[in-house]
Image (tube, rainbow, N blue to C red):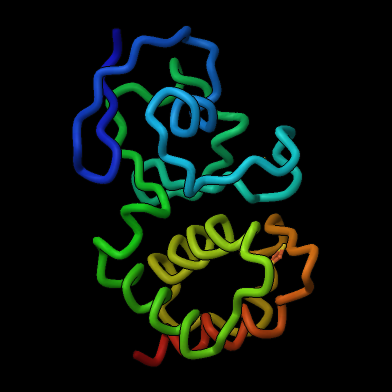
Length: 150
Ligand code: FES
Ligand code: FES
């Protein structure tokens, strides 16, 4: 049994050490906001935070994370930057099908946490690992600039 602190709440988790965090979140804890896209760290749909760092939950196993604070999309609004990003996302009507958007938002929050006024190039660099089949990239960039101005 391991204890994980997710969005500020402690959870006791009975799962193997090598289980990816993505499956712990979705299958063990029923937190389905974090999405499965590729399973091989190529799409970004599963992005969550360990501390302030954006990580791919599909490639982050339980034994790598014990003792670290985890934030998922369900807890994103709990930090001021997360709330601004979600407001900007709505204002700019970023979402199309929505499947990639949890990961996009978590990567955007991680970017703005370390760079309060990112340039287009900073945004493209930070968001390069988050794929959107619907092609919402232009609106994502606009929303990140908007969030930086809130
Ligand atoms: S599901 Fe983790 S990066 Fe695609
Ligand atoms: S909004 Fe559909 S995959 Fe990004």
